[in-house]
Image (cartoon, rainbow, N blue to C red; front, side, top):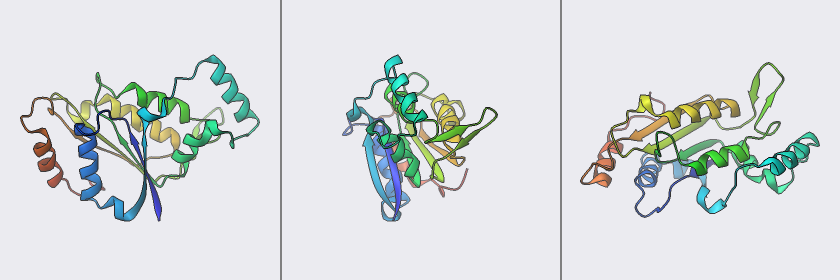
Length: 193
């Protein structure tokens, strides 16, 4: 069975509207029947940004092609996934810092991408990346800078097929979960724009 990697950048999962939307999208498209889903809760990883010491260590391991080091385990999860879902609420016009730290930790040269001085070539197996988000106020999909950044990251990793599923005004809604249910019921195919 193909592998779906769910990158969960949500807190308080019981009340998270973004996590709820993500689960409803998985249910609607029966992704749990088509893929073996591995969920990684980014908050549980307790990752740190790469400081000078970690960058030097990582670069030395990359130079020696020692990708069996545990430092690269998460990058290999990303590389080997057939489909990736990023589930992240909009925070301050982007996404939570925990997602940026994750991206920083897994975007490893010669593992997720190569660069020959002229162009970047992605090495990920995934054919598609789906970005699922909710926004407390009326930001439109076209103005979602978190998604715009994720598109560039996905391209660097070699994933050129990305899609955004986003719901706005969830902080203003009287019944946000019912509104999300209504939104999901009207979604078309995952391949539609």
